[in-house]
Amino acid sequence: MMMIEIQVIDDISAPILFCDVCGGRIAEAGKAAIVFNNFRTNGERTEILYVHKGSIDGKTCHRDAEQIIRSAGGTPGWQGLQDVFVDLAHNIAFPPALMADYDE
View 1 (cartoon, helix red, strand yellow):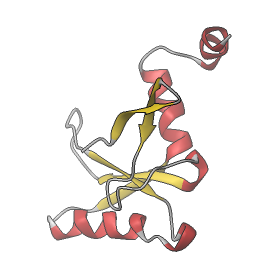
View 2 (cartoon, helix red, strand yellow):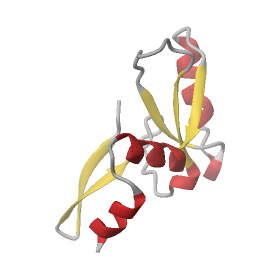
View 3 (spheres, helix red, strand yellow):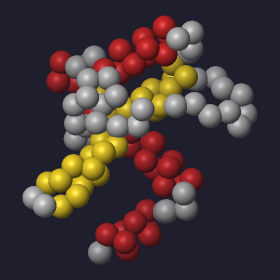
């Protein structure tokens, strides 16, 4: 699904992350997670759902995403969005020190 989209804000094209369950904007990494079909074999790939974590702000997106995985016969796993981005940065050779240099 990957709900990363470009949204024009003040005439600037900005990448924004949206929840795959409710469609609302994910504005804080600490309040978000990914949910995926867990226990895959080595080298196997699986899609992920970006969601609001827990029951933050009255949303149950995390639980609903786990139910989506279960209803398809899978076993859900999850990871906090902050950890996802740290792992992703490592996996694409974009370490935090380089991010800081790039941001300046």
